[in-house]
Length: 164
Image 1 (tube, rainbow, N blue to C red):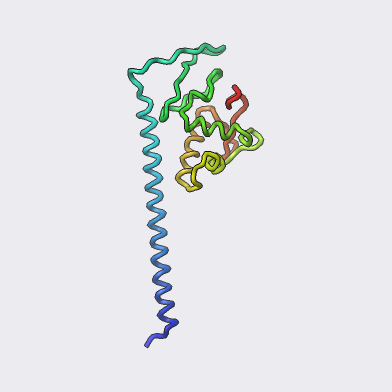
Image 2: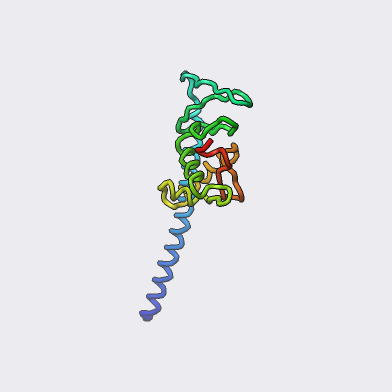
């Protein structure tokens, strides 16, 4: 007859294996979920840009070249930054990220990683939410709105926040 300690160890081992298997399954499910979130955001951006039939916004003349006065539409494409273009041309999510980075800690001296703006925006500190902020910040940096000091650390260059 097996000992009580031997039976307990056997059941503990089985429970640990089950937990490990469930953790692997959970990680895989989170990866799939994150891919769907990113895909949905991308499709929203692509479809949000098709504004056929809408009134064309007026043109603003700057010292460089004419700039289309854009209307901020959720899901719209992020325009490349140039003189005379204010953050109000960005979709609301992008404007909020710019506001958080420009307010207080987003100066060149003190860049933020994406967990900080995500928390300031009231988002849960889970990977999928932080990744959403990171992808938007990367897009803003690629189009000249933000500076990426080091990988994952973003700040607002002078004159590109709400003060321009």
